Image (tube, rainbow over all chains, first blue to last red; front, side):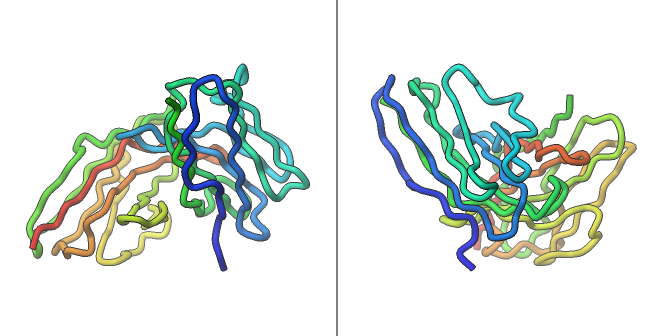
Length: 114
Length: 108
C-alpha cells in the first residue's frame, strides 16, 4: 500500500505564476483534505471533500485558490497567481469516512515562491 | 472557535527521563482529541486518540475536561521518540484543528 501520494514533492516558482498540486488518496477513502502548513505551525485546513463534494472550504482563499476532486478520487489544488506568502508545505490527507476517522497524510509538497 | 495550544516549541530530555508534552484546547462540548507525530523524513501519522484509551509506543494521554487538557506522557523517553508532536482536535465531521507542535529531543 503506497499510502497517500502527492506530487510534486518540491516546487519553486516566481510570484504571480500559477502552480498545481496533485493528490491520490488511499483507495476506498471517501474523505480527502488539503492542509497548508506554514513554517513553525501546525497544518491548517484549506478544503475538505466527501466524495466529490467540497463540504468545508471556508478557509480556502477563493480569489486565488481552487480545488477539484474528479470522480471522488484524485484531487488537484491550484494557486493562480501565487504570492510570496503562499510559500508553505501543502499536505493532502484522506480518511475512510468522517473526520473523526484516522487521517492518513501524504508526504506533502513544499512550495517556495520567489 | 476551537483552538489547540501547545505551549512548548521544544522539549529536550535525556534518555530514560519522563516526558510530558502539554496540550490545552478550547472548545465547547465534547471534542475528540488526537496526538499526531512526525519523525524525521517521514509523513505525519496518528500516534493515539483519546477514545481508544490505549498506550502506543509507551505513550499515554488522558483527556481532562475540567482543565481542557490532553497532555502526552511517557515514563521513560527513548532516543527514537525524538520527533515533532502535534496535538489535534476534531468535532463530529469537522477536519482536525492542530496545535503548533512541540519538538521532542531525546538526548543520549
